[in-house]
Length: 302
Length: 198
Image 1: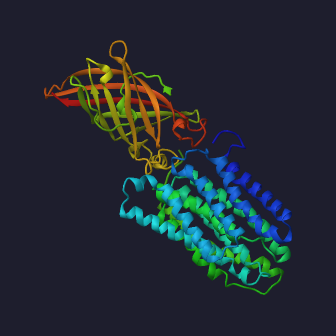
Image 2: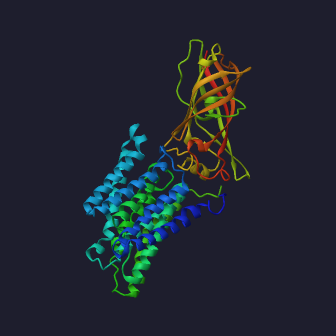
Image 3: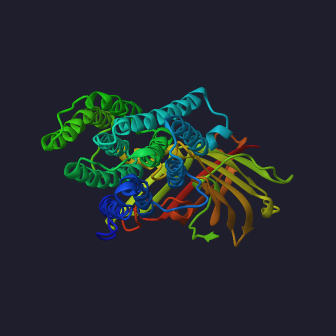
């Protein structure tokens, strides 16, 4: 789309955020040492998303349109996630934080429609999105719960970011099918920064059996960034397939099933288990994308 | 404040619309005739050609006070979702939050604040253009066309305007895609007709 290599969306929404997240993740991991490093490195994900937003979209204040509010919602998610991590919040507190985040974000996004008198359908949509938000954070935290039970078993720390990576790429493709290119770029950028985090986490897990923690910063901070994208797609992009997005949520159901695949400890297990896990959890994501494109109007380029 | 060149007139049709303004005693209020309201736009496409589009649903009214033109007013509403470029996929994209964001901002409106009469039947209309929730002042130069009864029904008085204006879509927050790809300069062409009862 003109503007040279560094201005291309593939670079601004993919290569740069991926590289930045990779470097930041490594830097935090090394600077934090063996105790704090693995817990804090995940902050590279929400920060990488915020960087991607700054590269891809004009940052506006006051934020009038919904897309302009996404970055501020992502910052709020990061703040809530960081606060939960600092206070070592339990599952209940984290979910309460997710609910509060979702409510505040949705009200801000939908304020224009709410002021004009929302329909029952509008209100139902907001309630469903709030429920999805709490469900997402719950599943992301639950995917890591084996780690909490057995700190020596770090396999669970790969599952949550892997789920969110699939959710991000799939949501981006579904948004692309719905002709909402801006949000497609942001969602795919989130997938790119998650990929950077997963790459380092997987290498660490493969080498030492210890992956990086996803934790509250990941579930709330990175999960919140994904939710911000989802909110705008559902509320304001009429051509983005809602049924496809609903199918996509089955990734969160596939996770506990995929986690049942366990091999004995060892090098082979460390290689095979994450790959098998990803393949199973990817099934609903692929189905959602296929459905989204199948429902989209066919078009030649314009 | 944006000043744009015009080659015609009609404030109302072009972008926005809405409501009927109160007028002075000698003023006449015309309701925009949707069947004779044409709002087109043109913008550059990679330098290869110009993309053309139109809005199919335009409504509103304008009030003309010939004795005291400063009392004249214009209100126009355009249904943003009625954008039509004769290409279904492109129209879908134009309605998305990347461009007109029609689900969040269903209308584009213009409300005049000042009208100045120039030479002949030309004038300058200043008002507030609200697009994507952002309101900015815009000034049009316009030409007021003939006013006369309809040849079939003398009780219906018709008049119209022609206008052309160039704006920068980025000023209203529509910044998706660089100007080298999809031009930020948008030229609007308006041909509007209104009617009132005698």
